[in-house]
Amino acid sequence: MNFPGQHIISIDQFDRDAVTRVFDVADQMIPYARRQRITRVLEGAILGNMFFEPSTRTRVSFGSAFNLLGGQVRETVGMDSSSLSKGESLHDTAKVLSGYSDIIVMRHPQAGSVAEFAAASRVPVLNGGDGANEHPTQALLDLYTIRSELAGKGRELAGLRIAMVGDLKHGRTVHSLCRLLQLYKNVKLTLIAPDALQMPERLLENAREAGLSVHTTSAMDEGLREVDIVYQTRLQEERFADPEEARRYRGAFRINQSLYNRLCHPDTVLLHPLPRDSRADANELDNDLNDNPNLAIFRQADNGVLVRMALFALVLDIEKDINKHARDLHWYTPQR
Ligand code: NCD
Image (cartoon, rainbow, N blue to C red):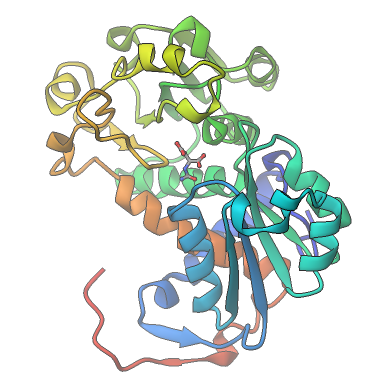
């Protein structure tokens, strides 16, 4: 994969070498993300951060990543505050916004919308999530996290055993992660969901064809045993045609410390793309797990900055110049 100038729309654009490249550059970003050094390599550059759907982590981590490289961020949040609500097409919006930015990140509720936008854009576009379809940068940061959590236990990605739990039908993060895992050898994937919320058939077929061992079940008792990673997801209530139907599944797949003690190996790492729904009737990852050292959700969220810095550096072709534009910093920084 040739990064400079590329749109990043789908995780299928990545081969093993490209993923390794992103992870290597992400590792180089650690001193900058941890505020040990600062770099101004993207001084003068503008990121158009266009979020036409709710977002906290993805939006702010993309923005922070760009700021940490010395660039500036212009942001649009929500349909209502943009001209899309006046009937403007994605084509026209892309033509206009790409005149104002050096690179664009976009999130939009419709599957395929970011690709359509990118086709009309004059600058690279990164997909921040297009409906239930894909979330490629999340998959990269998830795998980066899996790799580093396993490394902490003296393990590698090969032979990974991972269980994905919850709304696998509508969750774009698990769609992209499932595709990304196909690049690795001997991955054992357990998909825990009620039949109606199971991973789309097409993705299951692709995973099996790629040589993954795929097992589907609706039983937590069966699926959570003997895995290295549990990847919990949120019920994507906003993607159900009938909100009543969504409510039926609320809280059906909650994990708490006593379930973890009963079913999981004590080394099992817990991930979640976040936000976790902590309302009492959902509570998908209980607060009583907060002191569990294998709850890696906030390390995972932190890694989003590293991976997104790496993608900006590679797409804007400045990764070799970062250190040239760097210096030590002197304000108070907490231990991270
Ligand atoms: C996810 C998303 O937006 O798809 N969040 C994120 O980007 N970290 C998951 C979700 O909203 O449930």
